[in-house]
Structure formats: C-alpha cells, structure tokens
Length: 110
View 1: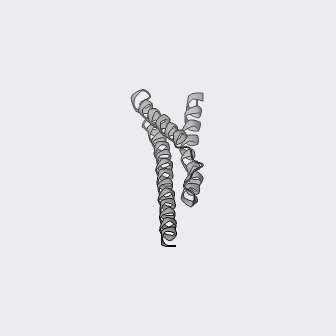
View 2: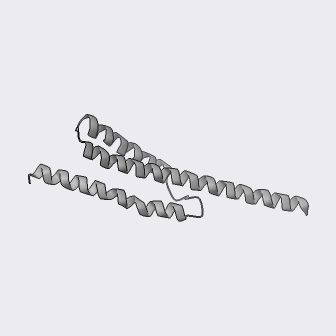
View 3: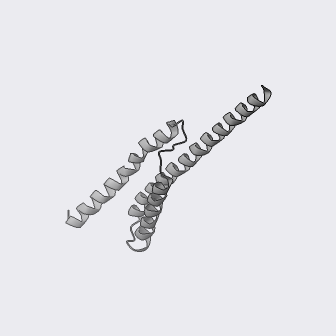
C-alpha cells in the first residue's frame, strides 16, 4: 500500500467508527430526566454544519462517495443529537409548566 492509500484507509476507518462514538451521547440524552441541559446545541449545530460541508466537498471536489457517505453518517448523528436534545428540553419545559399549573390550581383552591 502507498502512503496515500494508508492515509485514506485510516481516515475512512476512523471516521466510520466515529459514528458509533455518538451512541453514548445519544443514550445519555435519552436517559436524561432534566431536559439534556448539559448538551450544547450550538456545538452540535456547528459539528453538523462542518460534516455537511465535508459531504459537499467530498462529492464536488474530491469525487469520493465513500467519504461523503461517512460524513453523511456523522451529519445524521449530529442532527439526531440535536433533535433529541430539543425534544427532551421541550418535554422538560412542558413538565415544568404542568407542575406550575397544578400548583397554581392547588393554591387557588386553598
């Protein structure tokens, strides 16, 4: 194998395996009862945009569909993390609003 082939193989493998590295973060968000407040939507948005631009680069400049697919997977994982985070925050907000409503009704009835 040439140095370019080794570098390309290592790059592809590392970035393909990275898709699996998102799983612990996804599971933590799913299990978080407090609206995933520790997750930075700005950071994950930037990661998603960065991966998406790499997909475009891979297709337009490098003509490398494998690279595009790998970074497409990374983009989807970032978007999943963002979507789950926003969903969990909305759930938490609705739960808090419901508790406040119940407390307000209880206080009005006393």
